Amino acid sequence: MSHDSSAVDPLGSLESLVPWARTDRERAILSAAMAYSSRGEAAASMGWTPSAFRRALSELRMRAARRGWLPTAPREDVPEGFHVLGTTSLYKAGSDAPALRWVKTRADEESKYRLLMEAMTELALPFRGLSEVSAAPVECRDDLLVVYPLGDPHLGMYAWSEETGANFDLETAEAGLVSAVDHLVGLVPRASSALIISLGDFYHADSVENRTRASGNVLDVDTRWGKVLAAGIRTMRRCIDVALVRHASVRVICEIGNHDDHSAVMLALCLAEYYANQSRVSIDTSPCVFHYHEFGKTLIGVTHGHRTKPANLPIIMAKDCREAWGRTHYRYWYTGHVHQDSVREYGDTLVETFRTLAPRDAWGHGQGYRSGQDLKADVIHAEYGRINRHVVGIRQIWDGV
Image (cartoon, rainbow, N blue to C red; front, top):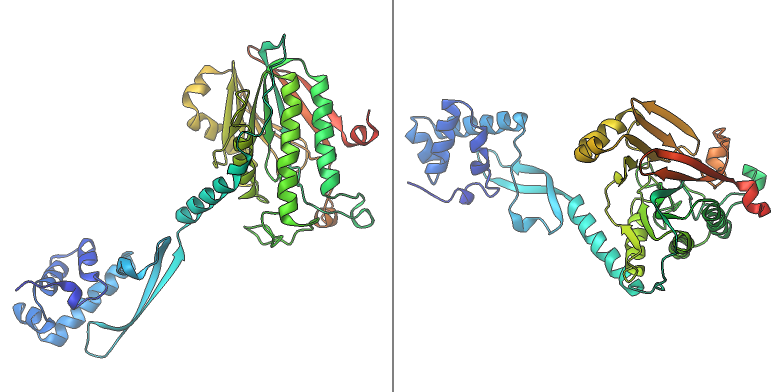
């Protein structure tokens, strides 16, 4: 006699147990439980007592659970955007049906991120097409690319000179970054292509909680979070507009850092909307933590550097960009996170970290970090790779040299 097993098993766990019945005995127990409307009938079909059958079925469940089986809750019990993390059931003595059930759920990360992206896109819509369309500069060299790596700007960070050795706030961060990019643009050749890279941690904080999302570290912040977000959009716009005076086309990558998991994505989306009417600007809105740019015989990789060891980056590049890897001779990784200059050579791939214009916060000063502060621009030749580098230091910026 067949039956709807959910009448006996509200969790629908009998069907979910099928792949976990590994022996002939286990499969026979499960088949009988699913074929009859009561445990008594199922037990009789096998010549067992009801108590022996219930005990055997319970042991089957426990063995399956140790192998990785988890009974699934009915779909209607779990709200949209959540998934079942686990269940706890309370059984009355002598009964296979649970008297009470607790379903432990967690917000589905994919659904959360999708909703976040949709919300950010809606917020960015008012910026659509507001940029002024301008003509490209003349006499630009098509065989050159200029890369502007913005090392960890940390807009919104606050530092007090009495505690850290230097003052820093939102106004200082904005003025310093724009002045540095303006200085470098005046030094580089008129290359047709430019690549502006925020190497992550463009923003110091990712929410009004003023803590890093992963570790929960308390952050020293200046002013309101909303004001910081607006200042960041304005700052990057000013950097892009300055670059457009010198270069025919500008591509922008806003890398995700450990301080700005979500606001880095928001920044990219807002810039993409703002420059939607500007064919000379390309904003990469991919939320991936690895980005690539191919120019001539050069392949550039970009990541913040907080998730992957430097030695692994050449392998990641080779696998992610198999065809581009084969076409190119020069390969560079641009990374941030550590706020200091370093270059490591792995075969024919250079992995480099960059300084920041921001001074140390109280935590960094207390840890003894004392790296310099500057911004760089690299000149890449289509045939010969990197052929020049320009540097502007923090003192040059404030002295206006």
